[in-house]
Length: 96
Image 1 (cartoon, rainbow, N blue to C red):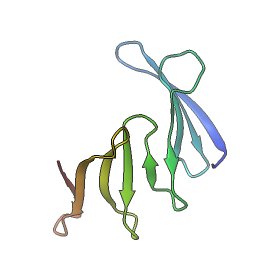
Image 2: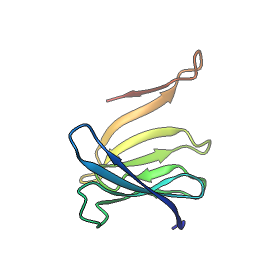
Image 3: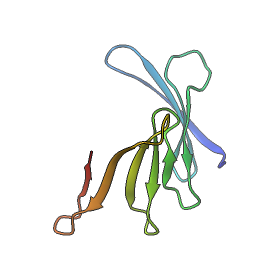
């Protein structure tokens, strides 16, 4: 795992804090969402920086070009969405 570079705390509109750590590549590594100073979610990335697991609900599969292709439920590995790139405007379209 890459080493944490910075920590940032945000206070949301309902007064909830969300403390996040990032590495030198600005990839999100951890989140503490309940202000108790213990990490609630540990996110993982592959060797080239693509998010592979959000530490909470979903895992992500990217293709060889780093494009998101599949979102899966962490609990049962069911496919939640499949994604494809729309060439005309380069937007990402995911379907459930």
